Length: 50
Image (cartoon, rainbow, N blue to C red; front, side, top):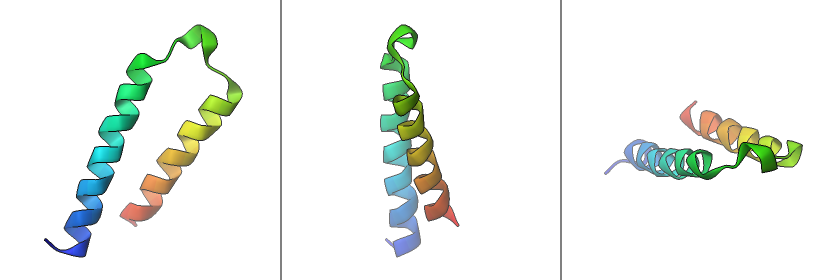
């Protein structure tokens, strides 16, 4: 497997994990810090795809 394929596979796993976390979130308990954390994760994933 090439490095690019490994990166894409890693990002897929991270995205699946992130989506699971989104499913488990109680909107009433979501904080600004939580949102910042998720945005940072998405930004990291985006940077790896560039």
